[in-house]
View: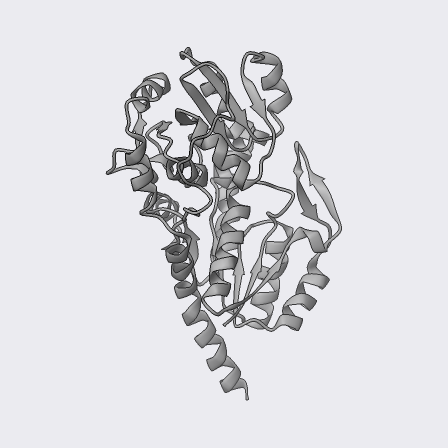
Length: 343
């Protein structure tokens, strides 16, 4: 099957959406599909206000439409609700092409945290965007239920995975500070609630790996914390493996791929009992969840690293990508029936 994936989130961004799409593309190709990605790298862009790492494509509609015409996909997946996604959506509606969409992040909550726009306003936009989609792919059952409570009636499950060959237990000494070592990895932005981790009174030392708009301020306010920039996956695996506890302070993530990466390296997780951590950790003994994040961190120190790794092995990109493809198959058949009828 020829699959086109349209995404406003791409390199140089380093986040869960980009990793998800890269891994999914790799696995779909291995399954025999032909995958074409349309990303902001093909367009003239401007930086997103307050978040310059995100590039917004300028007036992309004509080129988006030409690219879809040229590739003539059997299935069209629109991964994001940005300028490219909106342009691809318009093309699909104009030509009667079935398409799927995805809900990767808690967009309304992020927009409210960053710009102060009420979530009700953003949810109205999301209803408009996703309503024509044949399937809105959500990463966890909790997120699926949340969307359905907000009136979405076309939500399906598309889970996530982890590369167990890259992320694995190892003897790593790259974080050579006082133990226990508590680690955060991810975007350093207000919606990630990183400060809730940094202000905790914990023994040992703290590390932050990643970049984002809040990094300079946090470095100034918490100079005792150790900071790393953006790392390759191989470098990141060594960092995870060197830590004693991976701390996930976000209350707004839909999944949190970093949770699986840390667990795959044998590092237990400490988190709030909210969407994302609940979906990854519930039912196992690989992490500690508590509304008192400090208590969760201390409890996580008692978890056997072998248990963390064993829990991560339940997740694979191959299974997640097969699930993604299954949602696309009926769309391709619908398209073929429409072409036959037109002929």
